Length: 284
Ligand code: C2E
Ligand code: CA
Ligand code: CA
Ligand code: CA
Image 1 (cartoon, rainbow, N blue to C red):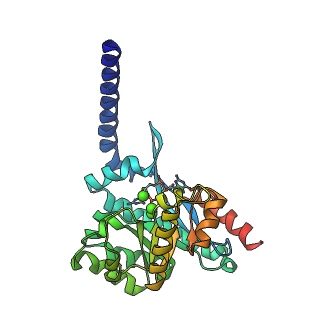
Image 2: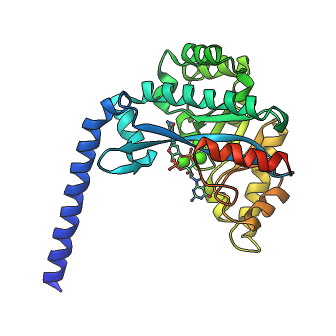
Image 3: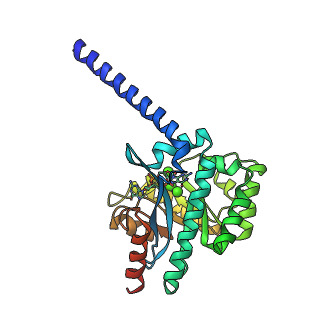
């Protein structure tokens, strides 16, 4: 038992080494990855729970690494935040996504206005160029501010002072929607919501997961019901993420959620896939 314990320890050590080496490699490769065009964006549709129509999409960035293949954002966003690359990378994601939204709107004018959701990291929030960069991108692309929704995590805004909220307020006044991402995972005071310039709550995936069983846990049902009714009373729309089954979608629709996102509808995919979904949707 002692020997195998020792082996396990060595194995764990080797894995930790390998992870450290990869992390180091990724950190060195990251600064040039943007110039080399190694990032790309996948889009995941946002679906109206009432009628099933596609109302928009969330942009999710990926890195096609020459040696490691496609890396998800959890592998490199923390590094990009650490190295400061997140600011130019975030700007790139925003511009690509807004262009995509314009394209989509031009090609499917009859399918209703497509909206694009883009994630903002806390570092971008504190970066002084945020408002001007966003204005520039919208002007360059000729996209209306109300086509754009910026997603900020609940944890990034916990205890936020007015300096941090000011740029978000400016954007909200222009007509850009601000969504509170991963809602329900932080410790924010619900009454605090009134202070934040947000118009959408994105309920964290953990709530959706708790709707897996039928009937769902009655306490979880009450919590979601409470959040939805509070959100609606504050004029906030509720989006649910991580919907993987029809039963979850139905449960969340009954609970009053407005919009849903998840593998049940579509996995994140290339923009062409979104065009196909819109066509299917428009033709019934
Ligand atoms: P998020 O904003 O909470 O995005 C939702 C995540 O859930 C995505 O993971 C998405 O692929 C995944 N997902 C969607 N539907 C389902 C489902 O039905 N089941 C399950 N299990 N998962 C689902 P992804 O693409 O790996 O992104 C992870 C996180 O990386 C995002 O979480 C977001 O915080 C961050 N991220 C992605 N793109 C960007 C970006 O451009 N900028 C910044 N700052 N962060 C980004
Ligand atoms: Ca998000
Ligand atoms: Ca989320
Ligand atoms: Ca998340």
